[in-house]
Amino acid sequence: MQKDPVKKLKVLFLCTGNSCRSQIAEGWARAMKGDEIDAYYAGIETHGLNPNAVKVMAEAGVDIAGQTSKLIDRLMDIPFDYVVTVCDHARDACPVFPGKAPVVHAPFDDPPKLAETATDTEEALNHYRRVRDEIRAFVETLPQSLPSATGRERTTSP
Figure (tube, rainbow, N blue to C red):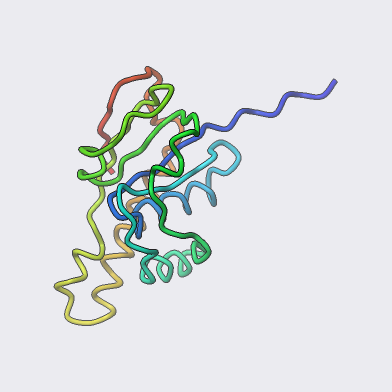
């Protein structure tokens, strides 16, 4: 008798511009948790894929170069099990999803914003690397750290 395949959790990583943090989170989830999580990413707005996010993920062995910045509107018909907001603006502007997927708020610093004050390229990339590593540590806790009750928001500390 053949076993039924394990149902993967559909998890959406949502941020404001969908250029960096949600892309990184999806990349880590796909690379580390692909057997448990069907990961998606989107933004409230689209700002394009940040080349520094691509660079620091490549340094860590995860290719996100083929991803594109996309609006949440394109994913509204997907029955997500969880929505993870990775910035405060996305949490505040998060739409209501069909099926009432619980929203988990895991805020991370905005690398492009931090890099604005960097004095050189290496210092700028170090901001991206730090946030990349913080997001990785968060994704490593999934899905066990996700709440089991539906319809509730939970904030986690990355």
